[in-house]
Image 1 (cartoon, helix red, strand yellow):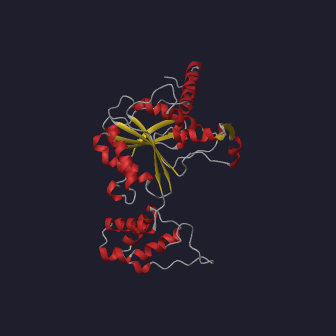
Image 2 (cartoon, rainbow, N blue to C red):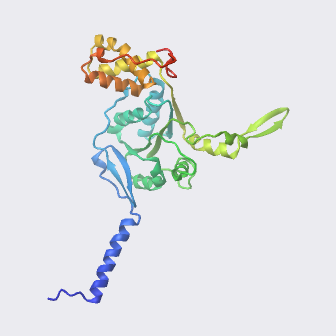
Length: 317
């Protein structure tokens, strides 16, 4: 049999190669993952293809591990419980100081309610434009899904901003009752605020009083955060609260009461070096100390700044 291609065979091969190249760049429909493979998933997009990847090694943090955030914990726990039980619940925006447990609290809630059908899908802000596709994918599932957006903030003109805004409240299509959005941010209004925005404020006099009306630029910046039904604010920790968190984590890593007491001063030095008394810094100190067997004498005092002033927020250390 001859290996010589006929003109028709050559044309068909070239057409097949062209179709293969087109399939690689054309948008592909989002296909369901193996929902039984995990309780948490990451939305990953590579070029035109997107998929939900199961998180094989989930953070084991529990609600009891998080200290000095009891009011915030109670509010998010109540909202999540309502959601899991099929009751009305709100989308949540967790804002405030860095390292105070915003993301950890969401992960702890997942661990608390995973056996009751709660699932989590982590989405980067660059991929928020695909939220409608995710909503359609999970619409008929029996589980309850939290879309998790960590460290959320937008610059002017980013596409994900309007997609999230429409999904929260404003799209002609109603959100399914098995989906909520939980977002964390260091900014309450999620968009950068500039002095020039204040130029749009208008003043109107009524009955001898001057009313202030924000301009369109300011209204646009606050409109997204207002669409979250529940705001939970986190604040920097005092020295006493920081040390309580340190003690909790050292106990978690198996140190006894005597070594925990001896670690107070090194923990304060650690915070001074880092310029922050946060839950994250407390956890990192506890890991370091526990990894060294609890020996606190290896922590050298931090040099004082030239003007002998402590970093901002640590003036009472």
